[in-house]
Length: 237
Image: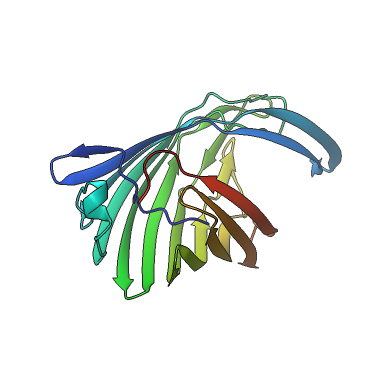
């Protein structure tokens, strides 16, 4: 659960900074579920829908050189982003469960980050809008209400490149309608997580992370624990 604020500069225009991401996910899905009261198996691998995200800093965190950035101390930062997901991944309309979704989605997001000594508090909110899937599971039409989300991150800098963070997320909405029949199921879910980053040297670091569901109305009742190795290319600070 990483902060969603745009904090890494990719291109610079005047006093503002921004980042443009292209994300092409690849996933493998395997499982069993009941569909209309009948057991169904699914085992598939492929690309998900590509996502494109533009993030822009609106206030604070001016564009700096590496030398200037070494002495920079954060105060208040405000940023915004827009993410677009396009249909284009693995999708089979004869199956109820797919890696891709065969529809567009649009997610505007705004966030604020405030440094308080060694603590940094970040809050972001967003909403995801969906177009209809007109070829859903046998030629049906699937519509979905917007999903509203909020994220809170509190990060502590221990010094020497070591930092830890606790995070919380909340999602609501997302009720679906299939061929005019409206579902009674919608999101009202919250999760918490933690991350600990440990530097190895100037280019390498290790991240330990975990998250769990707190309250789950539908969907995201699962636990995650993992370890990640991060390598940074180019000149370092």
